[in-house]
Image (cartoon, rainbow, N blue to C red; front, top):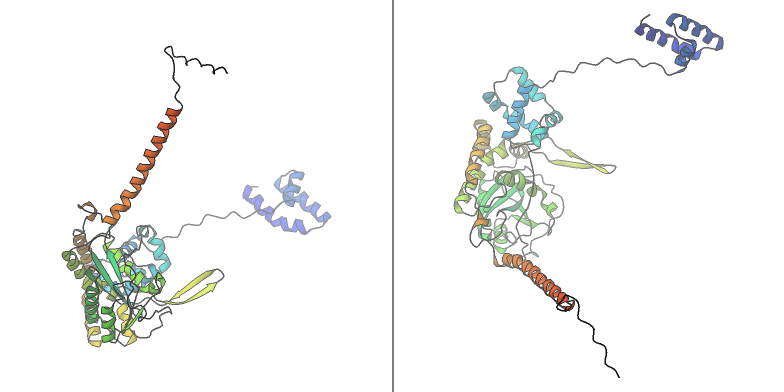
Length: 439
């Protein structure tokens, strides 16, 4: 009897032996020893021990459903969309599909699998690529002190049903020095639709900020109804206050040092400004013109016409964790059309643009323009007179303090050595002690 036959026979009599009585167990044990040629003591130990587990055969690995062609197309679309998250990327694939067909030679099976891939699978397949993304946010605005009692603070959550209520903020392009005059990006985002408009200005004077806001208002595909800002002096001033009052625009502000009050615009500061221009310094009118060229054309169309965004619906607390529920990702243009409150003539032009523009070409144009903008950045720290008087004082003051301490230590050491010096005679022996005078 072979090894496998012994195992099958053992499994056949094991349960019967464990349930049998003493006499029946003896007969089963005699038969078991005779058939398998086991020693009786070994057979008893085997039948009283644990049952044998079935040996599982190694299953053949399943072939991957999404081959290298699907993943290559997916990575190309992900990079062209500006590294969208998996849920937004899945929603963007049907919008980008007409131009994907033109740029990639795909068969019907590859196209079907590209559209049916799930968001979780996208995360797994793009895990290595996503390690390249890094985030950081900083700003250089100071709190304003004018008109604060006239501009109400908004602390409640946005619950709007029509476009036009926006948040605004300035993003500085000062590099690692805030001295002198440099470029700022005025960023505006609509709460309902997620529509974003950005303009670059040289300096953050109230006149430049209002002029940029007035230019943005003319290009918006909806009517501007409200503006919510932080407490920076570039916003909290009489010029912007009178402009909003004259145009019947609701003007509110967040609480000081509470960035969560302007969470929508803080997010757009990264995706629409920092992610593209980085943290370099720009301080010339030529740089302002180049940055506005990308803000007003290719970037505006790519983000508002072709990039879906998600909106938080509610939060559910499960024990110590909070689960966030989002709606279906949609582009800002689609959300504007669903609201039915936009400027119809501009919406028609935007729909025509989405049918004619190639998002892959827009993404390529943005990369080329960013390379040109990088050539205009300023190497400010290597210039003559790179430090302000306050910065010079902060650098020199600790150095002078350390120098005074070092000199004081040296004087104390010299004094201690002088006090402990013993005069010696010609032979190197100390001089004899003179006896005290006799009384």
